[in-house]
Image (cartoon, rainbow, N blue to C red; front, side):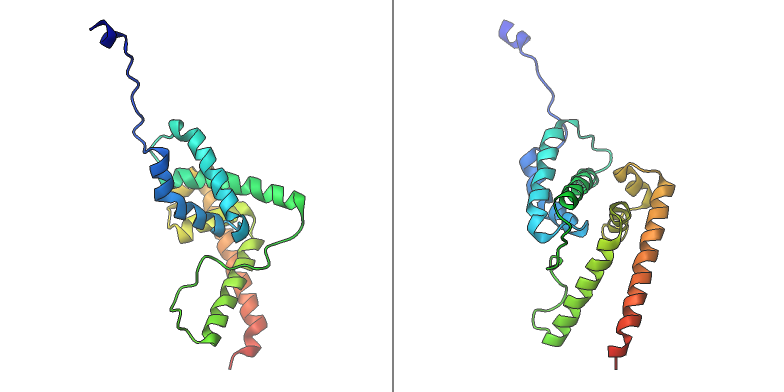
Length: 189
């Protein structure tokens, strides 16, 4: 009995273990890294660094905001650091942009596939022109469909700041798309 009394039980955190978290959210983190402007060739490194940070911080995770929100917040900071490092190393950009996969059938006609590829390239160029803070808000709002309050919490900013960044990002995308359509309008029949 004395042995049992000396044993100290440490409560296990209510969160999942790292391996389960990794398996469940790897694809989401990788896709989000690409959406935040990480070139495909560098996405694996950014995701690895993100999960190394997650592993280090897992014991401090508080489940109030949701796993994906917590992972995105960590990923966003890793991506910002990655972009700063990349800019310092070289002024080159990712010219071979191919965002994950294009929606639609693989049996599309070549002209439709080319149009879809061009649309993705144009959208990526427009998104690349956004500063990282506005891009993150736009990705969270439009692609992840998060409410502004949650976006503000994830990015650790004021709700009004999140709303302003989202408005400016949407205006930027709309204006750039309008310029692109006007410039390429002569090609339409």
